[in-house]
Image 1 (cartoon, one colour):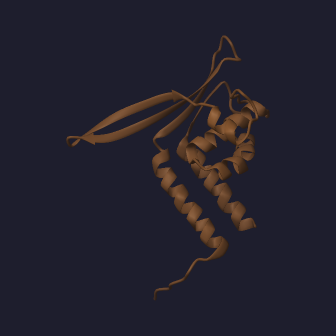
Image 2 (image 1 turned 90 degrees about the vertical axis):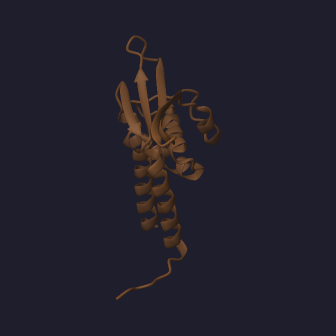
Image 3 (image 1 turned 120 degrees about the vertical axis):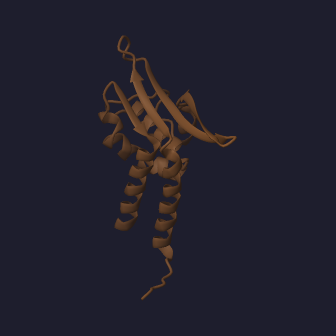
Length: 153
């Protein structure tokens, strides 16, 4: 016995968002964010974004690594909490970092603005001197939060 049904309205929106998140998850497993605080100068922090890429060249897989600092400018265009990233306390620097991480991982302005404060509270303000998180973990958290928020509406 097979059943066919059409998903409409709010349910369709939820499923479309989940499909988008699944696509991001596949790509997000290759991106890792890492925060490092200089032990000799605690105000000196670095947020590193490392992307592991595999491409096939002449039938042979080749692994590439792209490393760069996470730039606060794109997230500051969404909302300007702070000029600097910070973590480990509930303030404006951690809010900017949470916004930047979600925006970089998802590319979604609306989700980034909506969920960066809860993400800061759940993760960023709790991190110690150094931390590491995968883009796929951020995407998964945002996806679940968004899914349950839509169900609750």
